[in-house]
Amino acid sequence: MDTQDSFTGALDSNLGLYDGDSTNLEARLAASDSMDVEPQTPSTSVRIHTTFGADEAEEPALDQEEDEEEDMDEDDLSLLVRAWVNERSSPEILEYEGATLENLMELVDFQTQKMATQQATLANILKMDVDRVKYLVRSYLRTRLAKIEEHARHYIKDTMYRERLSQNELEYAKGYVELEERHVRRSFLDQLPPHLRGLEDVAAEGLEMVSKPDLDAAVFCRVRTTVGEFQFEASEAPIVMRRNNIFITRYSIIRNLLEDGKVELI
Amino acid sequence: MAITTRQTEGFTMPELEYLAQNESIMIVPLHRMERIELVRGTVGPFRPPQKTSVPLWLAIMLKRTNRCRIVAPKWLRYEHLRDLNKSEEQPDAMFTKLPTYYLEIAHMLLTFAEDDLVESQGIRRLLQDLREVRQSKTMEGLRMLNSLQLQMDNLSMAEINEIRPLFGHSFDMLRQLDGLAQATETEQQQSQFADQSYAEMDDAFGSRYVH
Image (tube, rainbow over all chains, first blue to last red; front, top):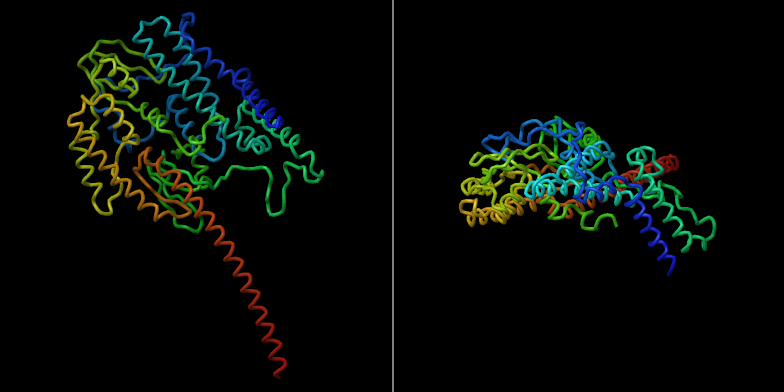
């Protein structure tokens, strides 16, 4: 029926709106796609991180002793890679990495400007590098959008989750909920008796209409910094969590450790 | 849809390769080049024949244009893989230690830099063996799965990604069954308690009639 069409149509335009206007990140990604940017003097505020690897180290990082403690001063790219993997694997939406994204986009702009002045070989390398960052940023944002769509109503109702969304994401979530509501009302809900029209009813025994992320879902996690003895469940004996140990467990059990950066999802 | 259904079930192969390409690797440059400032940091300078460490994606890029030779990492050498295979096959052995992205890195190096690996055919075969032994071990692990936690150290990213749907769903299913079992248990206890109190009442009444 045409209500269906109008729903998907409106949804598309809503998505379009998100991609185009309200996310300056996406717009900047698109803008920096063109390589003919006026060369500018490098801004000093841009941080270029320390040397990638020691020049004459005998063995590459791949062979490094893995028990060495994690470098706490991680670069923005590594931070976003980890945030992306965590986001992909966790049942609920996580904190938005706004500052990291900002820094990275600044670096992308800076590198894109630099490209224009370089000879072909070097420009190609820089372009590849920048494209890889852009790919990651896109995939990270899209992963979050997919998760927002899944439980949009819950995320905009709950204060904790609302604070985890960026301004644009919050607008997107609200738009999504509104569209969905208009669609179900028009297609059938308005024909039902008034007391059956609710969208956020709570039945007895905690049965709710608003879907929530399943916080007990199974996740794989790796320990980043040794935790020591950890109680998975009050009635069970504690298990020692050492760096690089890998566990499959319930998300809710390691949720706090993830927030503290002591474990990462994989 | 913001992402595909496949992507909600874990990572895709190209995504894993993307992650693996962020790892660093040693190369021997064949051409002189100055330092390059990348988003993540500086690489170079490239002074043949001095070895230098670069991210894998750059190594592959340089290799494809014949600008470098890739130094095979220690774990990807024939002898090392043979030893790994031996210890992996020991009965009751844990998973041997390998880089998180060993399969992806090995695959990419065998594809783009086969001429830089000594005995590449042998390496291929050993990797295949290693993978099979590890796979059967992982499946043994499924037996030990419960609804609380299972430790699986040294599994690589690709291996985890492979078992994610099966282990994830089994884990969730066990969790639901456990929940049900607990509910029935409390229910049974309650009804037992009820039966008992009826019996006591009967006793009480019975004894009164007897006397």
